Length: 343
Ligand SMILES: [Zn+2]
Ligand SMILES: [Zn+2]
Image 1 (cartoon, rainbow, N blue to C red):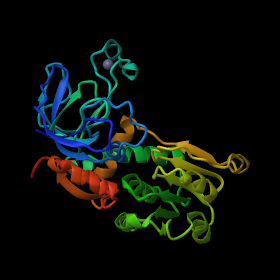
Image 2 (image 1 turned 90 degrees about the vertical axis):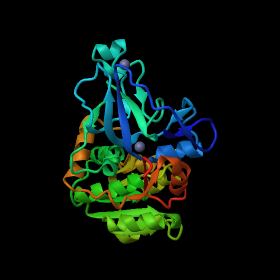
Image 3 (image 1 turned 30 degrees about the vertical axis):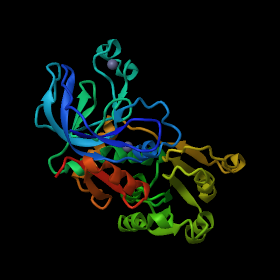
């Protein structure tokens, strides 16, 4: 089977032929129908700081949807033919702690596509201890593969506590930024500003299509001045670029009591003025992770058609064209690239 793997501590990935995995008694074999390329996969591809601990070789990919094709004898609650997705953080289900029900201190604590072979292959194994969710009939595999980033984004909206009528800027029209725009709209945001660069052209168009009120090209205009001019001070900034200077810029855009929600993965340190934070009661809040309930809500939003993921999925490619997919993401030509089996 074709697989997209990371083999060494240097930029790049490789496409290889691997044997189909052998199913153990506590395993579920999934035929991957859609594996979606995440910003963190792109960091691993470019080999920026923060992934030195990655065991290699490893099949990448932690955002997926697929069909159960085989199950180990100890597996309960999942059947052959089920359409599923699963949280990538995966207790093993067989160590002493898992057997005691203390899955949060599992000895293995696998992470799909990072510490354990992931979804960028025609078949993958997931463990019986995984949080598995069945995909509603009216949600396609491709759309369901975006459950993980949507759950992260939902977590950001939850942590912000945004109320209808409040204003927000979203830094970066990548997949997380574009999902944030839609959820802000669903949450009743009064005004949504999206910032990006000239390279983001297509993604900024999608942001506008999905409900952004104002677009700012940070290469042409000073984002802080421009936000003040068009919207005054904001209640929230959602940072989804990972660029260090955005933290300070975000703080400068806020009203007293405003919040910068940091979702982007920052490879370098950032500086900001703590006095502005203190005297104006502003907050910097890190957004990471999710739980099963966030995933269920993500699937509900998809199934109910409350958010539209089709414009975000800009490219569909077979696993064999992995390099092309990664390059489309690096060049920001793509919003979301979804890999799948050969057509
Ligand atoms: Zn992801
Ligand atoms: Zn365990």
